[in-house]
Length: 74
Length: 226
Image 1: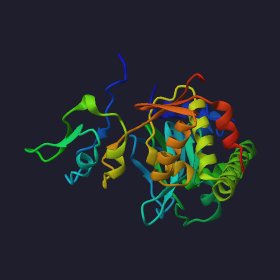
Image 2: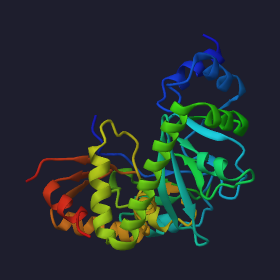
Image 3: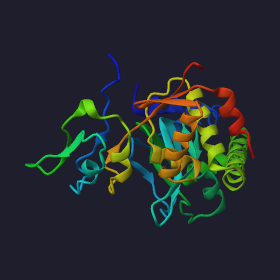
């Protein structure tokens, strides 16, 4: 299993439904659900984990945790 | 094994309490309260009155201050066997926490009443010696942080932080850019920009949620720049 589709974590209990994350998503991977008025990954495969959604969220309701490891020098 | 015997055994394995006789350890365990926290839980808040010595049994708690605009600066992390509030309890009966504490992962902390702590301090030389060494180490750590925050560039602090994180074996939990900013005394936007700079220089590579460090020599040279 690869980590290709790891997505930002959205804590809906903190979300104020402002839609800033969906508006900021450059790939339109995030969208607002019309019925529940909450953000969701409409196109998860399009998410590049750019962390823009985390940056713009005024509630810190979106987290993009990073793991830091050593790789080999090219 | 009962809860008190279990706590006695766990306390006895810690450097601070390892020189104490079994009856002293049992007395501590009997009068202490065990607290369990999940990641993100507040352990204590700035301005809260200090009413116990806090000893971390397992996990990781960050001690930090937050500005009015929401910026945070992490001073240090408390891991198993480490304590907080000792200096304040020795100095003042009505001391308050000068910073806040938050669990970074599942964390267990035992709170020991001040009277028990002061009894130990007044009766046990081995305990005092270990406590003194611990507090001296704490002081050194804070001096180092003060020096880095005032004299080193954010770029150098970030390089040092990345090396430290990557060198930690078994690191499993991820860290957000905002949390990195709180560790190195800056804001998220600067962390994001510097990570892009480091990637462009070939020092690291972004692989979705992974930051893969690729050039230790360059990062170390940057980290050592004052």
